[in-house]
Image (cartoon, rainbow, N blue to C red; front, side):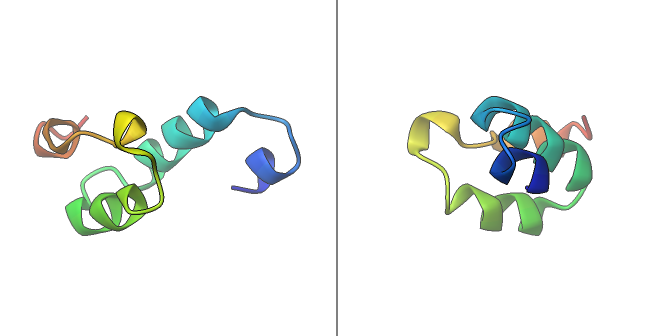
Length: 51
């Protein structure tokens, strides 16, 4: 999030960092999705496959 706030990465880069950080934690990914527009939500299959 710091990189996003500082303008070093864009919105998609921020989402990729969060996906890596929260990998394997479905509850955290679901909580983060609350703050994203529907078209940018991290899909449930991402977490279920352990990517």
